Amino acid sequence: GENVEQHPSTLSVQEGDSAVIKCTYSDSASNYFPWYKQELGKRPQLIIDIRSNVGEKKDQRIAVTLNKTAKHFSLHITETQPEDSAVYFCAAKNFGNEKLTFGTGTRLTIIP
Amino acid sequence: GAVVSQHPSWVICKSGTSVKIECRSLDFQATTMFWYRQFPKQSLMLMATSNEGSKATYEQGVEKDKFLINHASLTLSTLTVTSAHPEDSSFYICSARDRPVETQYFGPGTRLLVL
Image 1 (cartoon, chains in turn green, blue):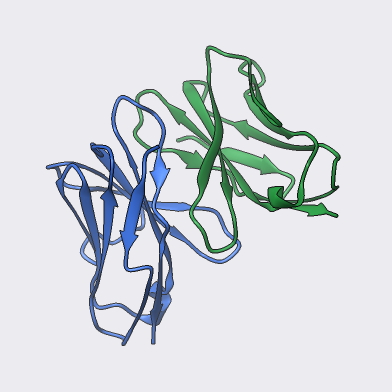
Image 2 (cartoon, chains in turn green, orange):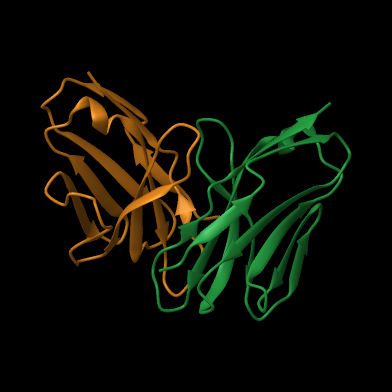
């Protein structure tokens, strides 16, 4: 089955700087890659997703890049703000499977 | 946007009792619902996948007789933790999607504490 690795597990960034979180996946048939943000005690919220026919997608300060050959994808947050502090999870899914496989999460702390 | 509700948000029960958690999609039809369990500072662990009108598919290691899942309608799925024990204490989160859309939308979670 699919295996998703996520790094780093914790990340501290000065406010205004950029943050990058990386994930690798094992199943070359995976074609859908969402990123979720989870604040303490709350539900995971989808912040951006990408499909395998696209190499990059951007939404304001958030971008995701996908390298299908290397089987890795990354989340980029620019001009970080204190409200970006949360746990971020990457996930992968292939077309023939119902379920998402999640990474282990990255705790992002923005230092004011 | 797609909204998923979950009830109750908190439950405290005695060991040996059963607890039912409801997951509802409020503004879309959820052809597929998922139940996850999350321990503190850990990732989301999928327990089971349920399609409306079908039996749930459980992940390896999840006892189907202990965690009963019913997906009787396109807007409601329930998880019943039978004969709960302290080790069942956790944060239970559901999610829902409307095929063929890939996106899963999560409920707010239910925190279960078994004494």
